[in-house]
Amino acid sequence: MVAVLFVYLLSLVCWLGGMVFFTALVAPIVFKVLPMVEAGKLVGALFPRYYLLGYICGAIGLILAIYLCATRMPRMWWATAALALLIALGLTVYAGAVVRPQGDAIRSITTEPNPDPGRRAEFDRLHHLSVMLNGAVMLLNLAALLSSAVALTPRG
Image 1 (cartoon, rainbow, N blue to C red):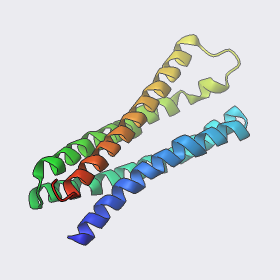
Image 2: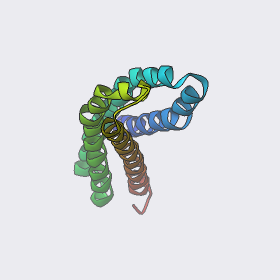
Image 3: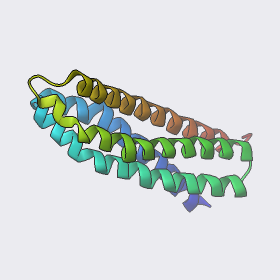
C-alpha cells in the first residue's frame, strides 16, 4: 500500500509542480527574454510535452485515487480526490487536444502587421480559455491533494 500511495502522491506532485514551474517561471521568463515571435514558437514547442505530462500524471493519479477509494477508508475523501482528478484530467485533455490545436492553427496572427480583427479576437479568446483551464486544473489538483491529506490523517 505504501508503494501505491507513493506513486499516487508523486503523480499529483509532478503534475502540479510541472504546471506551476511552467506557468510561474518558464513562460514569463521566455516572453521577457526572447522576442515575442520566438517566445511564442518556443512555448508552442513545449506545449505538447506539457500536456503529455498532464495526461500521464492525471491518468495515474485518477486510477490510483479510484483504487484507494475502493480499498481505503475514509472513502468520501478518496472519492472527492478521484472526482477532482477526473475533472482535471478532462479539462487537460480538452485544453491539449481541442483548444491548443485551434490556437496553433491561427497563431500566425500574432506576427502579422495588420491582423484580421476577427482572427485576432479568436486567438485571444482561445488563449484566455487556455489560461482559465490551466488555472482550474491547478485548483483541482490542489483539491485532490487536500482531500488526500485529510484521508491520510488519523481521523480522516
